[in-house]
Length: 328
Image 1 (cartoon, rainbow, N blue to C red):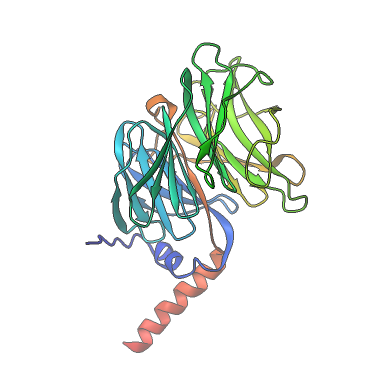
Image 2 (image 1 turned 120 degrees about the vertical axis):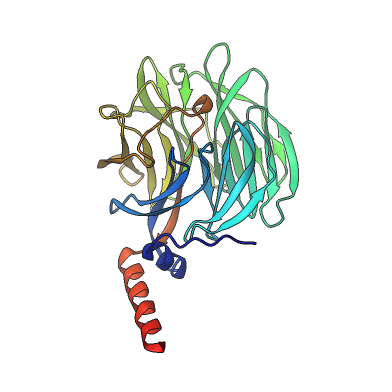
């Protein structure tokens, strides 16, 4: 039985127009248990829906569904992110650090393995054990590849292990020394430069008391094309809490995390693949739920999806209300 919640006119209209996509829409887990919708391009808040007060890892697919879980508990809540309607729960593993969606399957990156689930049935499909001696903290997917990203528990060096979902095989562990060792790694993301067709993966990390981000080149299928990491500073974020999360956007990424100056604010910055740099689009918003509390083991993941233009939403919403009035 579905529990339908109409949270706002915007959320109603959003459910009517997901087919005509043209801007980015973030899903931000709040400390109050709600999932907040935010348009990062226009800096507009678009309502919220209830998720769970202990779950801070969210992913979304192109079919209008969001998936919410936590490292501290098993199970994954499924919602319609336009209406807030609950679609039930998938039975997933504990110790989840990241959620990735590819081709009708949900992949969980945990502290020990990458697991695959059928999103249509919720059935468990396969398991690939990750290398030991690594604190697996993040995940990323592109093409037909799911990456697990972490740090060596002793040396703190960056470690990556990649799953080819077409063959179901896990690649050898990559340990790279091309970036300074660190103590935290944020949610990773991948995007494609539509002009050059080049792909890159990005992640934030903490090293020597400062937040930076690293970029790595990918092949068309999402595999790492080299072990080289291009690093740059990422100013404006706290160094004592969870690292900023990166999410794929149009022609690049957005970084989202706690503001370094005001603890109740969250900072959003955009990286543009066209000019290979932070694009200058940067601002802060009131943190969803009011606070940016530490997450268990710094497990925190937001989602970014494609949604209709605000003008299209408004036109469709007003049109629908007018038609209802006329029928009455």
